[in-house]
Image (tube, rainbow, N blue to C red; front, side, top):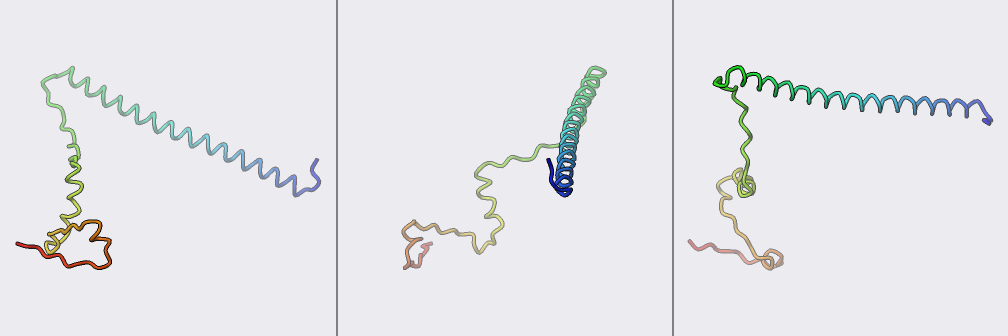
Length: 112
C-alpha cells in the first residue's frame, strides 16, 4: 500500500491535522452558539425583571433609557464636511462640465 515510511508518516500527520481542525471548528461553533444563547438569556432576564417591576408597582418610574443617537437627515450628511472648512473657503463656485473639462479655463468673476 505505502512504499516508504515517510509517506505513511506524512499521511498520519495529515490525518492528525484534519482531526485537529475539525475539533477546532466544532469548538468555535459551540462557543458562538453559547455566546448567542447568553445574549438571549440576558435579554429575557431583563424583560422579565421589567415586567415584575411593573406588576409590583405600576406607578414606580422606570429607569431612564440611554438616549438614541441623533439621526442625520441626508442634507445634513452632505453639508457636514463643509463645516470643517475654514471661512476663507466659504464660497463655493460650481462650473459646468464644459468649463471644468476645458484646457483653457477662464477666470470667473463674482459680481456683488
